[in-house]
Image (cartoon, rainbow, N blue to C red):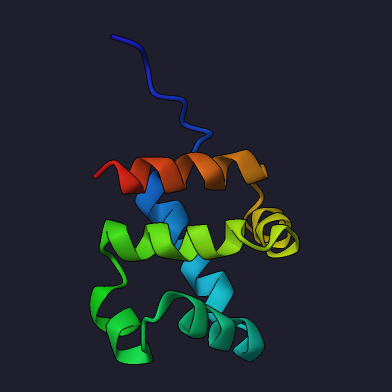
Length: 91
């Protein structure tokens, strides 16, 4: 069995961090809600669900400057967010 790379965050953890980064800025949070159709109550109630976290990362992927800025803020390469998105969608 192959050992897990401990430098790569868990997809759910990375998704939650991306959600927090996204909603930390009001304009970005408003765009997230508009694009995903999730309302603030949905986000609060379902924040840990893989489908919601995948939607958040997908939202970031749709606007590359946000994807890159989020990755930089989380100290991960953008590819880690993309991989987390794929992993979350597979769940």
